[in-house]
Length: 251
Image (cartoon, rainbow, N blue to C red; front, side, top):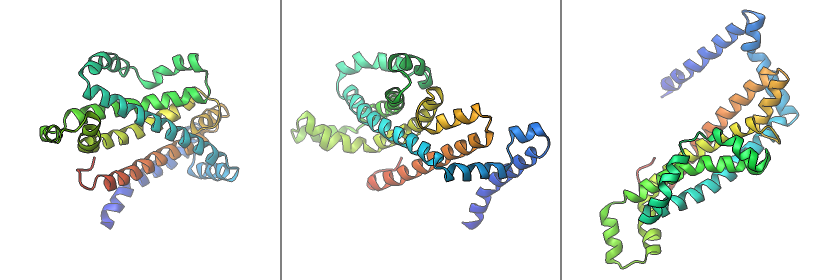
């Protein structure tokens, strides 16, 4: 086990060593590949003045709100499309056409409608979380085994009771898998929206300000923070999913 852990550290250590070597080759290299000591100093600076924590909290809060909206709306829309043939015929063509547009491609239009404030960013994040939730909810409910539906008919359950007591519990693993996908999309899109709509707090805004000031070391700190936070959030959600799905296969 320890040997595997050490092997997992080998590539990151090699990359760090290569980065530090490249930073010492020339002035241009030192700008493109900022020395690790300079990156560490930038991290200490951002932690000392509180700028990193303020912007990180803003991005996390924006992600959580948009994710919550996307999960609720996406689950409801996916269930409607799965359980109603009419709704599926009416909604599915438009939905599948719109989801082909990259999320960042919607930013200019949304900015035109709502400006570059918080409401525009939350809408973008919510849409990013909505798509995987709709698809996973729809597919999970449509694939519920026949005996579950037959049991609902034998028990003479109403449509709402079938959904609450039979269909949703059976489709839960797929829906939870959709939540994990939605989290990744929401986090990446939250930072992306901050890069394009550079107003207010957020890691994306901090990166844009650093670029304007030629502070490459701050950009690197933000990139590392984005990657680490995304990994931790995914790990925590996976642990929660395993607890929730103890009687089901985990996603």
